[in-house]
Image (cartoon, rainbow, N blue to C red):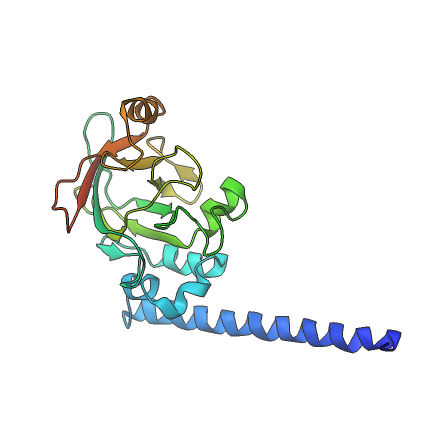
Length: 226
């Protein structure tokens, strides 16, 4: 049997290891932030990099993506991500049809398995999913209020009737979000039916048909927000 006081060196080792790992993460994230600001890399390259996927759930990592967001088409899934590659396009306007220019969009989704995390359908219930989902992105609308990004088509949660969807949030500032649809759904989802579509629309969310091809699906949404 190990002496009782052997616990303390082990505890110190664990604490030191945690600090070192934390510093390592911080160094990598700070370096990525500098590269993004200098234009040495792009949000697409960072978010679609398999070797950086372990950082995606970290708040500090997500903040640098948010801070460096701009009006541009981005890619949020790597080329090795399982699932059908799709393009999502949108146009954000107010009730009078006026474009919302240069506003920040945040979106996150499940994987082809219907999971927000690498290892489970959910992370820390809904709030955890929103703040830590592995597949996510930030960008800004352009002068016409339009945006576009490439991802994989999400699947609904395992053992449920929920259709695959992408959560979206439109923000005019850190403290103010616009009121509008919170989810983007797909009319060709394998779980979609008339009742489910009716529920989605009644909840104020959106569905879209594939306007691309079977191999290169494109889904376009008109988002009316206020």
